[in-house]
Length: 129
Figure (cartoon, one colour):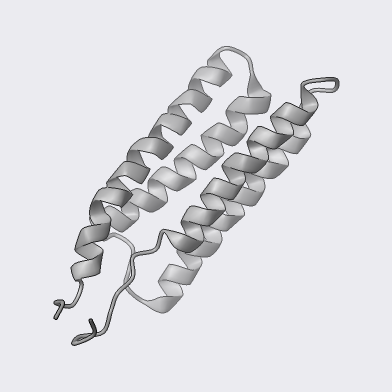
């Protein structure tokens, strides 16, 4: 028999890993902006910051346990994914590199959206196995 919340405790290392990975993505976005590559940097920065904040809120417990709060957090994260994709589309250069930039932005946005939907800790009712 599992104790209530034992799944949440097991999820913590994965969310810590998500904080690190999204943080590295945000850092690469900052470096890309410094190197004047905004087409790749801006989507990386948006996805990295949004994902790191969401994962950090999950790990630290700053995200309220209520259903409405979780939906708002999920919606905000998905909205950030849409913004990252839109930024990639708008900033993508013309020519041969356009498809690559759009594809990278789409993959980053999809990863953030997947984390928003699938990365939520699961809370089992007491007595559930």
